[in-house]
Image 1 (cartoon, rainbow over the protein chains, first blue to last red):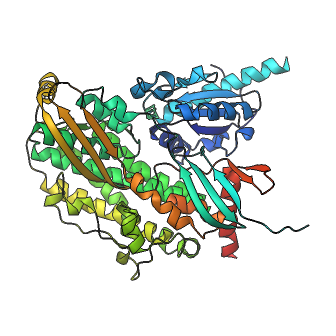
Image 2: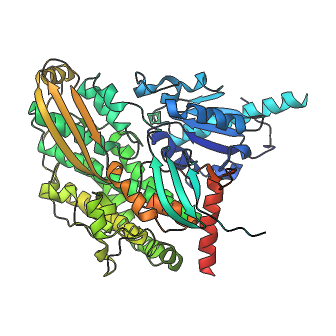
Image 3: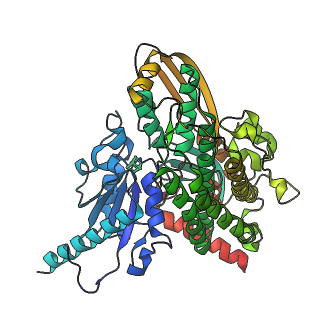
Length: 145
Length: 409
Ligand code: SF4
């Protein structure tokens, strides 16, 4: 992974809870708080998917949330990167045999970065965001060339 | 061109950018004022009970942790209690104390989390960051004790999986002192602030009578003046040996209104109460093992043979949490498992407390019962012509912030 010497953009993140246990959601908010302070790098949670570069999805995608997750994804402007935070969005995790899951998430929308862990630590989430920046920069280069 | 506004509907949800689980609200609005409220939970339904009835009790404990990431200890603890009752497992005394300590740290963590969210909904992001910053200390201690920041996985049928040894006391004591030192500041910031008082006093009132009729629990009930707390009403773990009182809004102001402000009072003072409880536990903790049966295969075998049914309850940070378990002695998995979390009791109060309030107050009132779900994200306003405008949670939040600024003058 290589980042360009200076970030050429700040990263805005939209978060969707697709039926998670809140564990990952608290860790995402904790990651945004002063101890880690990713706002230094322009990483910020926004209130609308239309403003966002990165979509953070937590939870195993319950049946009722499937369409909503898709709709949020469609509302985002390209280039966009999707991060799946938490094991339960990647494999079902502890909820693997539930009757109400439409996940894993990558069956619903394309996923670029996986952050495993139940729940992942804030450091892991921030690391995932850095990976997302790298991917975004690559995508942008492709668009330009 | 001005047009008289007839009542219109305002659906909110089910996606919220921070924290909470998805839920749908429908408000019938008259201008700025809420006339009727309805809500449809169930977006986060994962079929946990169904899955539990296919797993053995030790596996269920880890599923319990993930019913809710914020109050995982409460669910795992209450489930363990129910199974222990059925199988007649003798829990060592020391384990009771370890359970109490971790449950109280969870309460501190959860109440601070809530305080931050409430401040955010009011437009005080500085206070939100401050609350979450000091919350990290409790999360650190929880990690120090259990090894995890969330989903602690410390409960076990017949005790706890880890002990709190005397060499860990100084670190725990350090955290307690940290919070004691900050308590005055928190009271000052949250309760003596003129704007918070203006926004929260007389907002979202739940009278004592209605609180009782709606069967609310936990801080929501206590803020309305109901003296109920499972920790004192039917003590479990080590609470029977400890000395503490139920926190009512009277600890701070001499009147009980049952509004959002009183809910803040109760939660802030419960943080202090938790500090006291943990101190008492550290002082009184008896020696001995923390687990009744260390060999899992043997434990599972005993549990498989157990039959009967039990009902247990604990005081989670949000109120009473109950589990019902029935085992039939033939299979490993329980025959029946029913979970009743605290928000289930409290959510009906929304209908009561949101009526007659303004749009800008919706976020903080919804947050005030500390729901385990709350979604003020995509809002569509459907006017009488049937046209839909899509509003965002940002818009609602901005309304709330603007109201605060207006009141500050
Ligand atoms: S990965 Fe684990 S902690 Fe995260 S939402 Fe899923 S169950 Fe909860």
